[in-house]
Image (cartoon, rainbow, N blue to C red; front, side, top):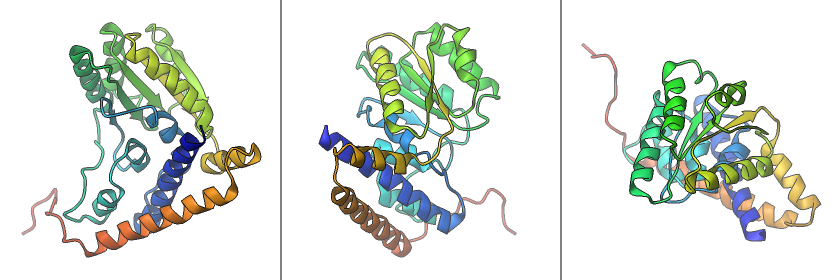
Length: 248
């Protein structure tokens, strides 16, 4: 259990440090979402697929993406990794879940739906499709009201405090376990909360499960990783041009 807690803290620390650096670089940041990303993704493995909104770095870090390549993406370097999609996330995940079901490999698809994602028709269609085909799909929604809406479809829905790693981890574990076992899709509604990273640290140190020094050492290691990633991205060659409009 201690190793698992250290791993969870490292993931959340990396997300927070990366997002803080991105804020300095571009002003773009998904603040305080590390507990939800880690709580879900730490249940996943190589069989599983996630899709998240454009520029939501935390989900990819929690799934194990290369931090150096992600920093290169922020800087527009050739060594970058592809960023998230701008649309169609729920349907993409339904496709991944259908493939896992057909291959019978126990894999799941996880869609992270950002604020406002519930309005496009594609989301409603994906939720209906996941229920109709009993897909191993998990929808993690930041919008409020999702849990009530999916109840009419017969899809389990649960509301959790998005800043409480342990609550998210428990809910996600139940949903993912059910999906792997053929129980179909689940929606997890992430209620807004404050200080997920700080709350985790306070809980595990207050309980004596992890010592302050252990966490401080992880902080130092992560800070070095982020600095190394930035240095690598700074010296890497520029990536190809991706202008939308032609230049004359």
